[in-house]
Amino acid sequence: MKGTVVIRALLVASLGLALTAAPARADIDDHWTDAWATALHRSSAATPPPVYQDQTIRMVVPMRGSGNAVRVQLSNAHGDQPVTFGAATVALRDSGAALADGTLKQVTFSGATSVTVPAGQVVHSDPVRLHVTEGQDLAVSIYLPSATGPATWHRSAVQTNYVSGPGDHTVDPDGGSFPATVRSWIFLDAVAVTRGPTPGTLVAVGDSITDGSGTAVDGFERWPDYLAARFAAKPGRHPAVVNAGIGGNSVLADTAQDGQSLLNRMERDVLAREGLTHVILLEGVNDLRNRATADELIAAYREIIARVHARGAKIYGGTITPFTGGSAHTPAAEAHRQAVNAWIATSGEFDGVVDFADAVADPADPQSLNPAYDRGDHLHPNAAGFAAMAAAVDLSLFR
Image (cartoon, rainbow, N blue to C red):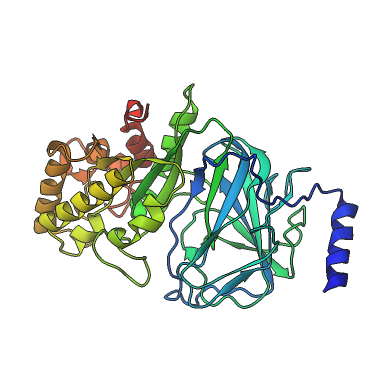
């Protein structure tokens, strides 16, 4: 083992990489803001489930905030056994799986370069001194030395991430050691920033319509992506937009494939986000498709509102988008959708309203998606529809 460490150190030196450890430092600000995050769930229902052993995964994180230090959160929240992270690094991404020169940093956990996380737990890294700017891609590499069991993951990242052959390739500067790709987030829960201009975190929470089902891989066409771009185009400080959508997810019901209900995942995926200041809630269409009633959804929304307010954040209600002609649409489901949307718009219980339904409805038939925004299944908007949804968000709500 000692010889392996020496060889690895010599390799780093010969490549001219600026690899440095970053133990916790008292002079780094304790005010952290999540500048990227996802919503993780179980993978045991996948065929086959993703299991890793003696492999490195390099994931590319589009940063939605800026800072002079970062902190990584890894999660084994949905695993069935302890998982060892044998090494981890962060760096700015050049292209593909290649890293930008001079940016590679070792990640440590309470000063150690490896950590074992029990099933059901998460771990924060120590602060890493690295300047990141909103819009940059951060590469997070994790080495998994022993069999992980079914990985805690976010199934549909709609983004290319990279998987190595055997061995620890966390310090490899180019993509040559990563012959395979995966379009999921694996064990990576969030990246927080500090000592920068990002004042807080806005969590967009929902189902596949927030997760970006059907959008182009690496296209960043989800409505939260378009919202982040709107913020970035305006001068002044604004929150980092992070996406907590899960395709197929429901407000009320757990599923093996699509994660715990929103009620059950709220603490982990929304309330625990570093620097949380705002939430946009758009979820409920899958509940309606499974015969939930307006009263059931409204009761759940009231609980969610109370929990967000108790956290000291604001929450904006998004009206449920039309799905006439889509799978499991019925006249009864449509009546409940309209009742829910009327309550969202008029009850005053949310801190504000985003009328997503109106943004993508067919002007000639408001119970249906605008054909120009329909991906083809009469349920999911296309990229133009997601852009229209983001345009419906009043940015002044976040001053």
